[in-house]
Length: 443
Image (tube, rainbow, N blue to C red):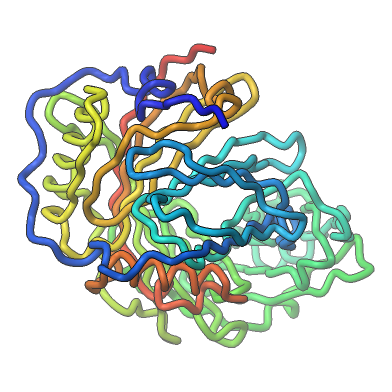
């Protein structure tokens, strides 16, 4: 087996062309959550790969490439998932990291493709759970069709109200046209929502579109009363997304209130997100901080949300960024000064080539060491020239302290749940996200 030694920055060297700024991160803090435990290494590895199509139906994804790395990042074994999307194999005694490689397709019409490379660092084999992929251009047996909704009755009865049909929304004015969308019977009933013109009340409903390709909407279709979500951030800068376990989704519109519907679904959550530009030393970065909280039936969040990329996190991310640019592996990182509650960290390097997008994610804990990784020659060739380059750093916390192995056990359990929103990891999380981007585009 011949592999190409891939410096963390060799094929991605041109990603890291941003101007240098002085300084580095704070010293490492005291070890807490996210540290690997002393659990023994497993002798076997099991993982499943599934693909979700445009009607949200999952099926096994065969042929996903799986690479085993030793502590130095060298590829020591290669495998692919079988026709059932399953890989069960011996875990090499000197294996330290594992990488999966496959394509995602994120658009329905022409299938924009992204090569997804995911490296789990400092793992010990065993059950790695279900790894998810997306193909929105693939929809066998979905029974999809175009459905037209006639909205004239609503325009007359509820002028200037906001109508949401299956996630698409707009205001009801005399110029509003009838609404058409593609819907797949396998998706079940479609969600509809009507918010009053003053944004102080809302009603919702669900319509079974089986054997229907047109439907006339009336006020009687909206028979569930909405409860306004008390924004846990209370900022005009945040985008809010409220959703229920397994079904309902609703987004705010131009910082307007958002509603949940307790008589439609039992478990509701709110996701808040704030994006802004910040300066780290002499380099401009972009933060996109998000948080999730469980809601009660009155629309109150389980706890306060504080969305902030603090100085300790930005300094450590920048220090790691500069270390990677130096190409002096191994690369040490430690986010404990930012928060000792951090469970997972993630580094994304990405860009575009002539075939689409490329994203390499490196998954770790609160602290760790990143070696120079080897990839196969074919994979190296596919990522050799990139434009629209970027690097992003993420840290996720759940308000608790556990070892990295314990956090990963919960994540594996969540990946195998029929409804992942019911996992303890879905009840509350905070993500600090800091990215550096280069707008230059070359092939």
